[in-house]
Image (cartoon, rainbow, N blue to C red; front, side):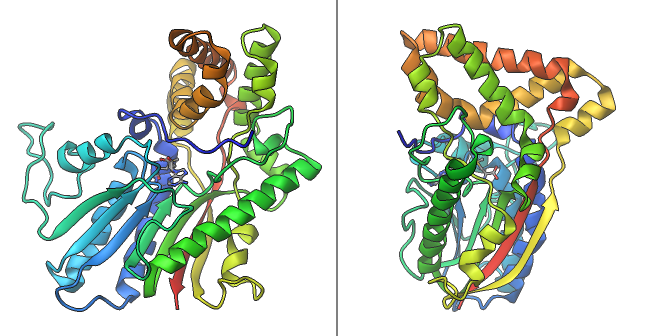
Length: 377
Ligand SMILES: C[S@@+](CC[C@H](N)C(=O)[O-])C[C@H]1O[C@@H](n2cnc3c(N)ncnc32)[C@H](O)[C@@H]1O
């Protein structure tokens, strides 16, 4: 089975439990501002189109979009701006529009902060000439018509592959793959990355720019294992435990692999700069940067030393991105009913929480992110 990605856990859960992603995205904001300052603007009266690929519920995109709007308004006043949030059609787009229209912490559509008398309400003047829409098309297809996008942004999304490689291994995560299996992941990831970039290049106007934030791995695969070992290892161990206890069907477990891959900087750059890449004639690389990502949850743990609070935050973060796909790929296939599947899911994450609480230092999500900016020639 080659599993496809599913959306994040909805209803505001991803928004509330994605502080690692949010803290990474802050680094992209000056890159977005610089990209706008350096670009040619559309003619007067024509809309500037910004597309956010893999937006999820949108809270983590809000600051980037707000700063893009503000940069554009400094240059073009109230000329029209079209914002498109893209994600899989299964995404919680209701929550995304709630964020944009109702959530004082996430709405970029209103110019001023909420009034202190009612912090649950949006106040202030609505941004003039800012139009917001959403797209439920996979970003492995063309999402927008050719030559219509001025600025593309995407954060923490293209590590989700179009499908997992059709292999069987005794691990659910590519970091546990070795030899040929690891190679199959790298090949799938390279194919998907070229497809993603080709679609974006078609969509960009000439001179249009793309600012990409990707979780990334250092080039040495062993170092990667060290970096993220705790998360996939613990998840895999708990699933194996549940297989051994007869709760999860072995065949279902062995067929499940996350369609997920962290590229090295070299792998991320290859289609943009290699002379043999079909894209290198069409795009130019403006900048690339790799940075360690701070983990706000762990920083808080170091301050409070509260193991239970840390374990709860860590598992909530894990659930936000992994629960829907595990529910689809493993638990709904092993359970006798929907309520049984929910019980198994709670059992699984409960086991992880106990392990994290027992040894927080063995469960730190330490990754790097790479930030790429490129221009369509
Ligand atoms: C980890 S979330 C990132 C959300 C947000 N950009 C952030 O920075 O927190 C990854 C998002 O990518 C979306 N995604 C995965 N594969 C996709 C695809 N093929 N097309 C569009 N969106 C996809 C998922 O549904 C999910 O909402």
